Image 1 (tube, rainbow, N blue to C red):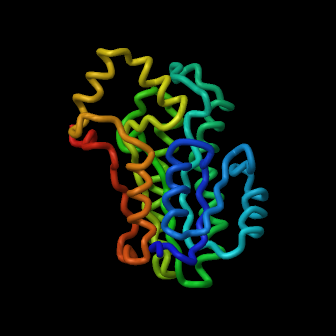
Image 2 (cartoon, rainbow, N blue to C red):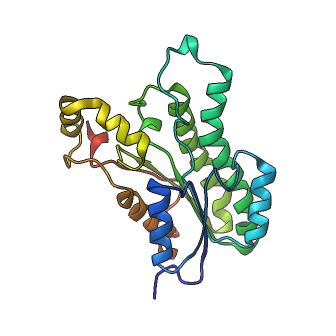
Length: 232
């Protein structure tokens, strides 16, 4: 038997990497997992999100993973367009807001819920890729986590956040890693206490802690799962 037997979970951003690993682990622990990715539902569209959750029914667990830099690379702030800024903010912050709002409608009447938001080390520091909107949106996810923990706590709902470090989880992060070259890779690892990059499973295990029934007195927290990178 798994510790999540009988629970229903929604995990966004499950096409690859961190979201996929989280969905797999929750399933292994007994949850019925509804994985969602941008190819199936536009999570920045509130009507589409509401329809998705209405079709699923009661939800016990929500993990907001969807996000990323949506193919962007650094350009000077003077050259950032409205459209490129909005695209990143929508992918990271609006999706989290839309899904949390929809899940809360299900969780609050039943007096129980577990919500985990995936931010980034960039949200606590700076973006290694230099995408300004990404850092801003991920910092906002941390603030949103605190506010939702405060609002939803009286209804038995915990809201927590994970700020991953450098995780080789998808083609974008692998291209970034390759782009550093041997010297840049060595320099990055020297700033990580454990001297290795992360895996999607490292993040999934953190999520499993937050969504456990026994973690009911843990809320409003952001934990950096980064191999100790944030120490430096």
